[in-house]
Amino acid sequence: MWARVGLMGSVALGSVFWAQKNKTETSPYELKLIQVLFRHGARTPLKSIPDVLEAQWVPQLLVAPAHTEIDYMVTDLQGGPRPPAPVEDSYRAKILTGGTYPGQLTTLGMQQLYDLGVRLRKKYIQEEPFLTPPFNPKEVYIRSTNIVRTIESAKCLVAGLFQQEQAGVVSILTDKAENEILYPNYHGCKLLKRLIGHRWGDSSTLPDIAADLQSIQRALGVDPHQHLDFILIRDDMVARESHGLPLPTALENWRSIVEQRAVDMICHIYEPSKRQNLQLCVGPLFHILLNNIEDKIQGTTSKPDRKLFLYSVHDTTLMPCLMALGVFDMKWPPYAADITLELYQHRQTNQHYVKVSYIGQDQKIPGCSDVYCPLHEFKEALAVYALPDERYHTLCDSVDDHPKL
Image (cartoon, rainbow, N blue to C red):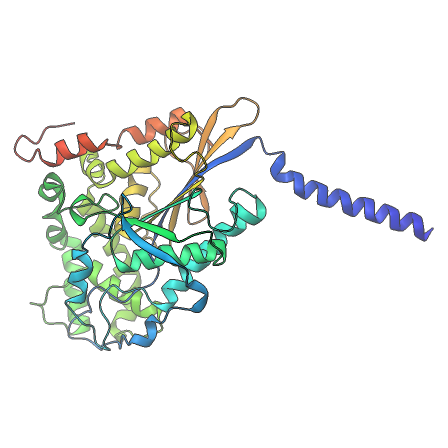
């Protein structure tokens, strides 16, 4: 009797394991490529709200946890020396109360990116053995904006994803500031500056935003002549809250309005209903994402083993990307938010599909018939905004004739 029960029990248990093992194997979709755009982690604010209770941004908040350390180097896109970093230099020209620079990744931010790496590890190494540990430069490509917080965020994500196991040095690639396409580049694209540059200041004069701004300045006791806007207020507010630092009491009641008005401002700045604006913000990046997919399918890449592209970027990258994809939820992307594009091939039909997720939630892209979006539909949806380099540069320089697209 016992022998029979034991045998049946082990058979039943075996069948459960078999079913779990085959859950991924029986999926009609086979994963081929992953591309992840992610925001850096929590950081010191870019500016402090003037005339209010000051937070102490002390160096102890920036200590790197030992488990986030890896052997890495930063290069230009060709593997040469790291380019100059004027954006980072501009942060380091100022010092916050407490003695740290603006815009620096904190211990909390490092942990957030490490945790994102662990989430990706669970999905792509443990649940579905797609990536091969340890870190292998043939499989993984990493590009970051040339700013310390995004470079460090990329490093922490890789530490979490591969648990600090690496075969060779991790290279993080960056580009010159004037050529950067991982965020809307007002300095590198004259037409973008002409179309959008003035809208930042304009947005604070819109009647509803201006009225709320006046009220909040009064509530905070900020001199009405001080330059203040909702994006700046939100930036300082969220940085303080994330690190458990004190908020001006008056700000407590304004939280939801600050969040809403900051998003209202960004929508006014990018004006997503105008296709050309979004093209100039995300066009070259979308072109790269589509090219990576095409290279994988056609086998035209010089790196046939490549499985993962990581792009370490900013909130100002993710928002226009989400707008162009038609899935912006009118909420500011949190620290360490990610947009992930997965390329699949159907096992029976050999057709290709793309699945987009945002912070772990699958997104159905307008123009796509399903969450698993047939490749031709996905390409059509992105083609509206994607710009090859040459076209992008021609447009950027066309400030005089300003052609309509």
